[in-house]
Image (cartoon, rainbow, N blue to C red; front, side, top):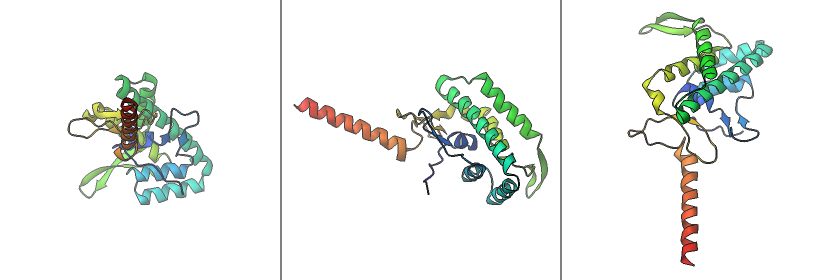
Length: 204
């Protein structure tokens, strides 16, 4: 079984945006090849519970064509979410078209939510629907975009084109890598190799 990448986003919308690996490549690796992949990714990111995931997969099995259509819509939203936060992280501004697409998805999501009694009062719930992962991503994106954490959203500094997005929660806001165990260590290894090569050249 292929090892899935570490979820490093710090927010559901960023973790889903990071479900494409190697965006700079001619053929990037898309981890959301099926609707089941979408559900699994959303569950790993904490968006849906195991029970909700089971219900979604049951619905997908009952209507595979609808599930395939929803996967396409979810992947389209993912690209707008990525463009919104990547643009803001790298240029300080996001493309208006992608902003509008995320807003439209959130507006649609709100039409399918409701307040219901919960253990500690009222809680926000969603209709049981194949669109639930997409609604949750849209909600997460709007919440992040309108929070103080927006200024802490960064793109991985890897020169290999990682482009993974993450919320920098370090105390001094100095985090540069999506993951120290991956891109961070690779960068350190490259710097060390370059330094040793320069030392050897200088010693000649």
